[in-house]
Image 1 (cartoon, helix red, strand yellow):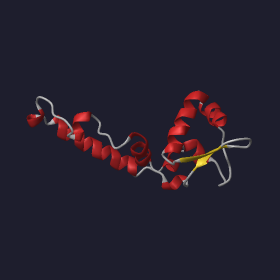
Image 2 (image 1 turned 90 degrees about the horizontal axis):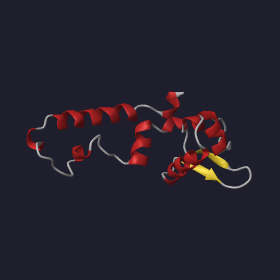
Image 3 (image 1 turned 30 degrees about the vertical axis):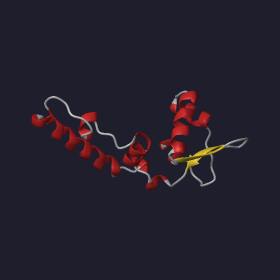
Length: 119
């Protein structure tokens, strides 16, 4: 996402190979990531000769919290923070409140961090 955000021009397409080489990561792994990001409508992919990918929206309109929620869901730091289940000391556990507060604080910071500010 950050690499794509650095690219100039609305019609500029970047290939997976370009990104993989620049970031020193596997083309195969990056292809899976790109498919996931395209499924969640963060990137647009264009197939064929001259194809590639680009951000769907401008980088200043996307923040890290949105990407994490959009791709991973709004999951808590630990499963029991979602209050979906119980565990043996839940009624007296103070750790739960601390971790819930940390979870909220983490997303507050991530939501205020546009991807374009990271580079």
